Each structure stands twice: as C-alpha cells, then as structure tokens.
Length: 343
Image 1 (cartoon, rainbow, N blue to C red):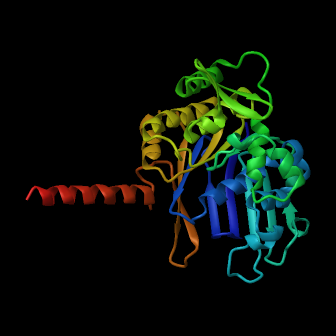
Image 2 (cartoon, one colour):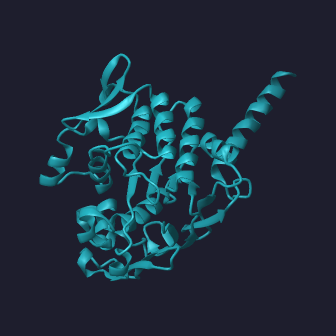
C-alpha cells in the first residue's frame, strides 16, 4: 500500500497557495460553500485514476480537465482568477516520495500543452480508486455510458467513471473475512443485496427486486459502496473519494455510515471525505478507536479572499470549524429562546 501523502497547489481554481499533508487512513475536508472541498478531492482522484485502466493513456492534464469540465474544455480556465497569465501548478505526492506534477497558465488551452513531471514513474505503482459524487448515478445507468461515449454531455467524467466501476461483475469466490463483514453490515442496513441486469440496478430483498429508481437516494449511495466492495473496486490498498456521504440520508443512519467508513479504513482503504454535516463529524470522532487514523482539513477564505487551509489530527483542535460554529450558534439561539420563554 502506498497512500497519498500530500498536495501542493498554486493558482488553481479557488486556491492561491495550498500545502497539505494527508492521513494514510481517513482525511475529512470541511469548509463553507465555494471553498474548494470537491475540487481538492477531484485533483487527488485524477492523480489516482491515471494509474489504471483506460485512463493510463490520458495523462494528468487531460484527466484533470475531464473531471473538472471547464467551459469548452479550456484547461486554462482552471487557473485562479484574476491572476492574468500567472502559472498554475499542481503536485501530488505519495508516501514513498514519488510525485506527480503539472504546470500550466491561463493561456494553456489544450491539455497537451501543459508541462507535466513524473507521470511515467507515477504510473508504475497503480492504485485502484473510486469517486462517489453527491449526485447518485446508478438509477440512471441504462444507456448512460453508451450515450456519453458518442455525444457531448454536461457531465464531469467522474459520473461515467463510477458507473463503469459499478457495472464491473462481482468477484468470483468468497471475500476475505474483513470485507465480508462490511458487506454483511451494509446488506442488513439496506435490507437486501444489490444486483444488476442489463445495466439496471436492483435492491434484491425478501419481497423481491426493487429497481434503484424506486429506492431512496441515500440508500442508493450505500448500495454503490456495497457494489464496489463486491466487485473489488474498493479493496485494501485502494483510495475512496466520497463527496458528502450524508446527503439525502436520514440522520439516524449517519452513525451507521460513519461505522462503515471507519471499517473501510481498518481494511486498508485510504479515504477522503468532504462534508457539511456535524453529525457525521461527531460520529466519526466518537466511534474512532486509538488505532484509527483520522486527519481533518478546514478550508476557509483568508483576508485576501483566497482559500486557505488548516489541518489537525484532532477534531476538537480543528480551527476554524464552520460546521461546529454553525451548530453552536443554533444551540445558543435555542437556549436564549427557552430562557426568554421561561420569563
């Protein structure tokens, strides 16, 4: 296993300068809207994706363009604005010291004009990865990949990628004990198994098969994780990027999702989460053990208006914490109203 270790960016989208180190287990990214949480996950996913499958032929610049999908495919539009033609640079490192870097400017319109470094060596250590977007895609699977392959569509490549991974057949033979335990827990939570027929996904339970279009959206996302475990896309040594795991999920189930995330980390999966949810943060914090490896990154806008970051291995020490601040303010308002009502 050779997990991602760090990221440095300059003049890329919302970031003027960012230098981050990551946990080999779980890295949780928080911040207010428009501070670049999803952008951070997409950069790292693109770096992983080009080490396997058809993406090996694309290169880092092309994969970045495809997962961000700037207007008319213009890579230069990913340069932070307004910085003129100042160069943007992105560098991702692994724990073995290997690095993948890319430099371009606002007038670098085509990916093949960007200056890349380290890709050949980077690809020598393939790593399976999966990006779970906020929008659920399995319910729309029939014909999606064929249509995307033939026509221009307003979907970032992360959607085609995750659907292609979900459509892979399940592995032959039994799963290892730890993976099977996570699978069993998800199946109990969902009340059935996830099966696929002719690119249509079903939740197969005691009362029969229910197509995913009729399944609650929050449950579909858990079904996607279940499918990726069964077909080996999420396995020890892989990297999972999960954008807002709590979206469309009953708060009562958030603790169960936190337990799944921690179990995947114990299995040897490196995980990157972006979240707005206080309950998920606290469930992860309260359920973690001394051996679980968690790190937190807070993205915020500094005095210059550019996005900055702070990091901590402790949730309680993380500052600024926009989620906790909003929750505390809500509790304060509730207490003040109660006190006012008591006379």
